[in-house]
Amino acid sequence: MYRCAVLAASLAATLTLPAQAQLQLQRNFPRDAYRGVMNFGTPPAIQINGKDALLGPGVRIRKPDNLLALTGDFAGYKAVVNYTMDFQGYVKDVWILRPEEIANKPWPRNAEEAAEWAFDPVAQTWTKP
Image (cartoon, rainbow, N blue to C red):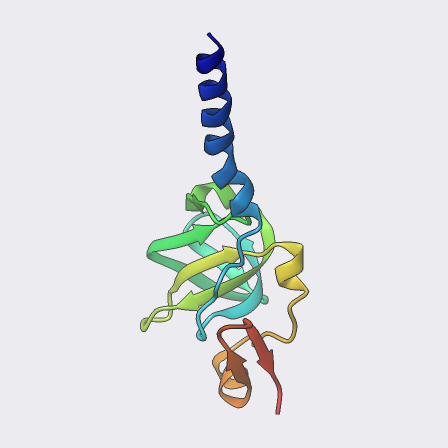
């Protein structure tokens, strides 16, 4: 009996550890990820920083806990995000940001700003010249 209780307790602790550790995980964003305020409409329609855009086929939306979500879950939702675009101009990746990620400023809003600033991929920071 005692062994079963110890085994069950250690198994429960092991199963809950990844969920707790995931909240502390630093997400690494690619150099071509831009920051914006995204208003989700009826998929695939969105607005980024007040401009109309479309979610691309196969878009990946990551919630603050870094789990993937479906596009329909966000209709009518507004969030600060980092996002990437594909070569056709569709949004292909979206990360809904946590408060500590939003506080990581500056972050470029478009390709022009990214071309002028310097990115440190290890520290996940941008610096203006």
